[in-house]
Image 1 (spheres, rainbow, N blue to C red):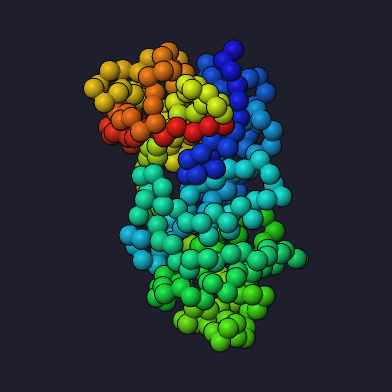
Image 2: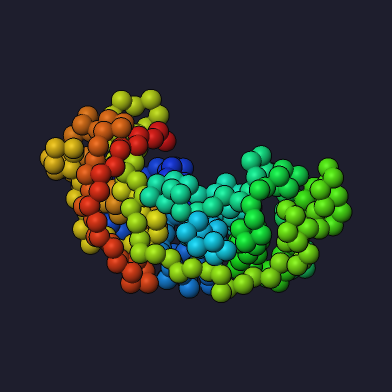
Length: 305
């Protein structure tokens, strides 16, 4: 049986938090379905399985740069149920400007904005942001998209019936001379509690290849595996990787945890260097049936685990 390691792809972070993969042709007997929110299943279909314990799939909504005022759902995974909501708001705050999605999502949070607290009581969840959020220069349409993103992200979780936002612990009043009740100057928080508006959600586009990332043990000279990361769980119909001259990379191909990557166990690990061009031909289908195929060239990213 192939070497099994845990590959935590917090999707789009593009860093294997604890690297590795499982061999598709030798799947362990006991597979457990990932626990998914209804929002995840609506936009990305049936959740994948895992043999690594209880896992949770959910969606984070990011304001769209292409259609102002709209938000785009994105899938994420975690093994820590207690951190679900915290991870969600932290990723929303951090934005999404990586891989093939660079430039497609807005970052309406002002630089330096931090999460001061996250509390939940009787179905009411309150997120408390630092005062830096008041420095945002976004217009009313973008600010509304931000609030919709916050509301939709939290409301997908079981038991949440109301979402509230604070700045420095206040829902109303002044913080450094700025009125919190008018949020960023456009009346956003006067609509408290936030109401999720499903009509602002854009349907996900077909799946994309995000990056080609090689993993190696810390301090090792040679890579151990080369990952073709996709933006969601997919069925890989075709994957072909070559060097810049078109020479095929040889080795065994595995399927990653969560079905989000094709993993090549290279026959000649010494060939793979950070920054080298990798040409990829791929064809995939996601769990909803959206298909995509393309050919592209990527710069090899090398990570340690």
